Amino acid sequence: MQVSDGMSEVSLTVGPSHTLREAAAMMVEKGTGAALVSDAESPTPSIVTERDLLISVGAGEDPDVELVADHMSERVIAAAPDWSLERAAAEMSRRGVRHLVVFEDGDAVGVLSMRDIVRVWTSEGATSGMTPG
Image (cartoon, rainbow, N blue to C red; front, side, top):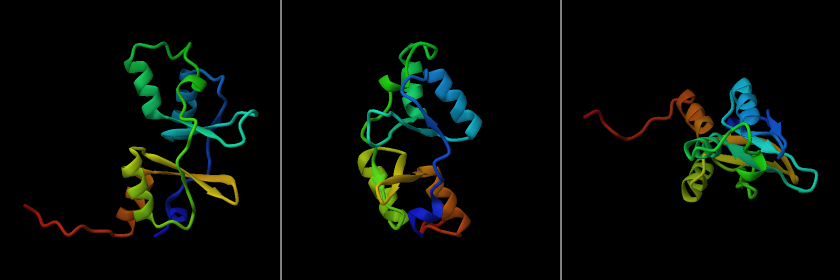
């Protein structure tokens, strides 16, 4: 199985001037755990994730005041559509992230989450070598 089998097309893009509450509301509406951040001054997108939102709220920051620009990851971790899901999962684990932005010919074409990988593996009947205890 490849990244292209599990990735979601880019379904949500927010701007750096959106508040965290606005970004969270859009993420809930779209049912996604991450949004690409598009900024005319940057050639590549950034990303804001549900983890970024939780860290801010957990720190007592006001989601109506805090801006996406101050909480997004400016350097996205990229993947290619033809990577294996195992390679993508290993990269997520190594980098400590739950989302990869999928690029093809220099354009962001999708997002792959750890949840997407689990969904594909379980729908394809993937099994582990573990025996019930």
